[in-house]
Length: 91
Image 1 (cartoon, helix red, strand yellow):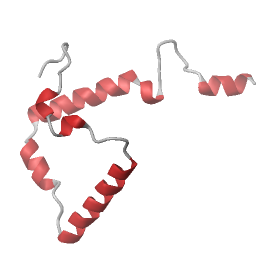
Image 2 (image 1 turned 45 degrees about the horizontal axis):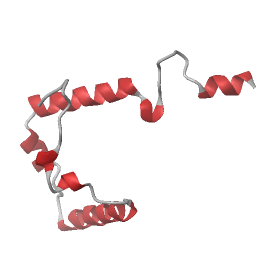
Image 3 (image 1 turned 135 degrees about the vertical axis):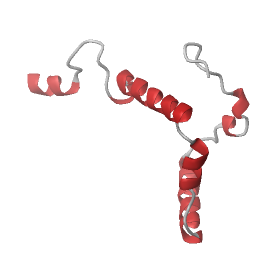
């Protein structure tokens, strides 16, 4: 029984994993900030465009499948200017 508990509980106090993995969230946010600040985002977007009509259709089908599973569309997609920034990390 002790073996099962040790597998499901964090090893250190304050160490949260899964959806609450704060260290991973900080690393991701930092890497994203660095990419936006240091890289050519427009070039990366061009590089990510589909290479063919077939690939474009495949991406559209995948997007539609994802939208069908979603509860609601994120209203900020139509109004990105309404996105509030973190006071500690203003953009």
